[in-house]
Image (cartoon, rainbow, N blue to C red; front, side):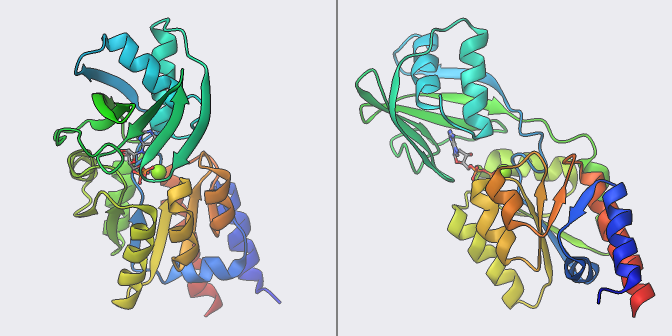
Length: 279
Ligand code: ADP
Ligand code: MG
């Protein structure tokens, strides 16, 4: 049976805001040496806002309308922010067909007969190189680059203290993100995370987890997205944000119910204390 101390620890963790699916996961968590974080929606609020629109020719609101059309059925925070900005500006949203989400890349859809793509540089290859701290969503209409929507996503208020606390407890932190190098660095610097791997497609996130484990590290991976699900399943302990996608929560061993990084630190602490009691 499960030792009483482990059951008590599961209950204690539940009171501090995390759901642990099995006592074995707490034991695994007690011995991790590295915490790997996804960025968007995990270290950041996942509520980005549009901070700029660069159009090559179309009026700004028209570029926004087409992008919002492509993103109309998107569950991704970037897509939701683009749709919200269009609504806030009173832009009438178009009719949309054939929506397709390509995790880590972006979306495509047919908007009023034209294929519109919205996403990163791999999806819109003729987009100009983006630098700076904002995340760039490039837009192509009928195969031609039409402009870029810039978004900024604030970090979660407790994230900096949580990272510092993990370091104080001797844990190493690492960020793996599908976002571009510029915004990834900016968030990592703000939070004190030293190591960053940016521009990773979902399978590259998985490869990063495999490489860390092959190097002998024991990992907790914290994420929220469809793109994080394989990495969450592969890490020694997968931890999903409560605000995350269904597939992230299903793939994880632990769910942070209110998506608060402080609850992650408490969960690690309880897991380590339970281990000392059991062993
Ligand atoms: P993260 O790993 O930081 O959570 P994602 O893998 O979800 O990021 O997204 C990585 C990149 O893919 C984004 O920075 C963006 O360029 C692009 N992208 C993903 N989904 C969308 C979308 N719905 N609309 C536009 N771009 C997207
Ligand atoms: Mg994410």
